[in-house]
Image 1 (tube, one colour):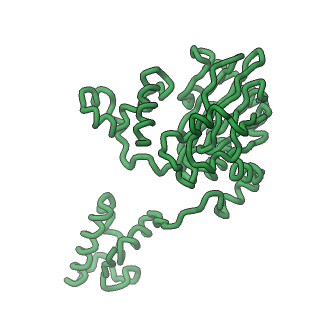
Image 2 (cartoon, rainbow, N blue to C red; image 1 turned 60 degrees about the vertical axis):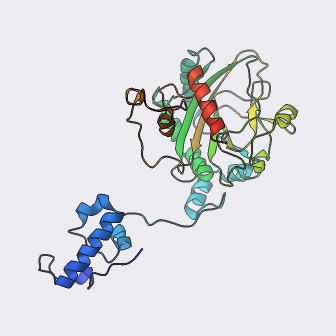
Image 3 (cartoon, rainbow, N blue to C red; image 1 turned 45 degrees about the vertical axis):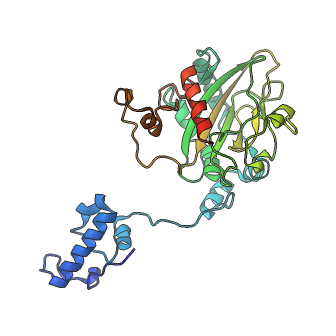
Length: 338
């Protein structure tokens, strides 16, 4: 971007009320025009601020400088590495880097997990399938969950700083429930998946997880394939194993990891909470969430697709809140890979 000179150092210029020379007036006008093209929303701040370039103006306005470097996966910044070490998460990071999943011990005192269990159970048990989503505003305890220091640190390791909360789902799992096939969390993305992980899921165990109790099923190292499993691989389930986890701890896994859950064979029930985060990068730069269903009713289908009104995610129920929403979500997921 070209640099616009103002003729003299703005920091040593005379009284701002002094009448400028014609040359300076021209330079200032040129600067103003350039800034208004590039930073129109800050044009009203120009009179009291002098700068030799748009970059200098950004600095004086406190606008961060764009970086053109990308931190490689698991190559942590010094700041994040210190944070991970202080929280005792170094082994968890090593495990997820190698195997695609890891453990977090002692997420919170057990009385907190007991309270979380009762809250999830109360809300999820009211649903026919024992599964409740869109939980954040259902009880204040969920705010504490998504802000847990260990979870947030690992969310940044996996999805970068500024990661977004993608979903919050509570489950009450009873004996012999239907279970999903092996799959990947980021299945809306076309394969091969990006080397940088796009999503991460934490499974907060409110009860002990064992294979018989319905623990998470994983295929260690499968995230390195950077694709979903094929139908034959789903059937074979080669190298699949159960991830044991104590109550009050969590299993977390890469968005590319092949995973599912083992069917519960024990009597009774198990309570789980899934917390998923995703990268900020693909969020639209402009939000049209204020355009509600009344506005979009009767609009062309293609326009509703562009605004995310046909993917089942723009409702209070979320993608799994109804058959119609789930159908829309799967259809749009399939489209995104073509």
